[in-house]
Image (cartoon, rainbow, N blue to C red; front, side):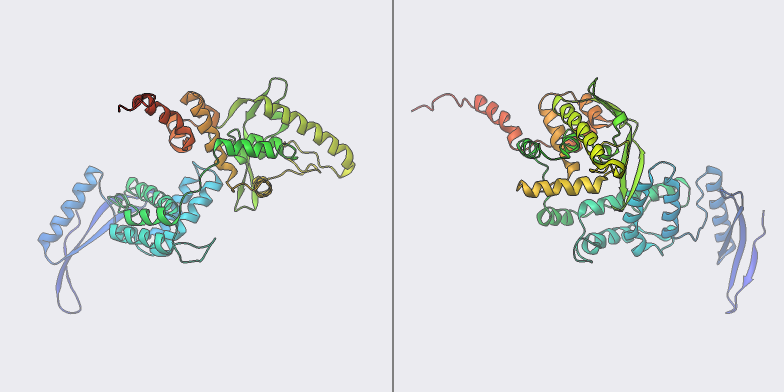
Length: 395
């Protein structure tokens, strides 16, 4: 056991100091903690505390790592579990935190600092798509806070900090109410709107791919489809490949988002007929273009065989919405309309989740099934019966 040394400082005051062995770090390097106190009794008490915590496996060794440095390390750790596009999303979210608190030592970070950071992000966090420095959507701030909590939770596991200072932080109720009032959520199309759009684009060249988007496939799944994934005789579609975008510029091809995303779907008759016509059209386009045609395995290509990406498909859909004088919605949000329709039609939850490519049926119902007022008409009719609506009021 290291001795306790008496130390006389320049101003003449006396301190007592010792060194405690705190084990080794993840790289095998020895960790030693220096204790300096006013009295020997305080030194002994602190040494005893450290040794007890080390024996119990609860010792948090002093560290100069900043929050910004730890977030970078955590992002590298997450590369083992998530796609590069997801890492990019995480990094873009956490830059808000790094800008404000990245310089703070991880072990000195407080709950109040995290709370103030989130409040400021909501109030002034907007960077683009509008006036910089204005309010950021609460949903975006929630996502940032979720990532921060996950990173700090990992720091607890690694015994860099004892508890997470973000554990009980929430976006304030006042901010949520302001956001709800000033930033109403865009509603997915209703079933009649989806049907109107389908009817209006029947003669469009990309009718078949858009129809697939309107039967619950993600845009990245649609543009990732290859003709080899489709069996026109058996009327099935195998979903194993996606082509997503990084920064709306670079195309990243990868397998399905999750194991549940790798699925085989039966093709509805309208989608099957549309795909047959689209394949025949592409054959004619190839013949007309001759050597100028680029052979590609993908279903969604232009007239010269060049693959289209999610941005192309989205912009094409927006143009059609303008021409049909329909309100603009994201193609991805068409999944909400599709899955709500299937749920209202009585499709069982586990089938609904399998169609959407989800593992958890309750997640599918919670996130994607959004009944609108027309979906509730049957409930109103039921109330009429309950209230005796068919009976005449007594005179």
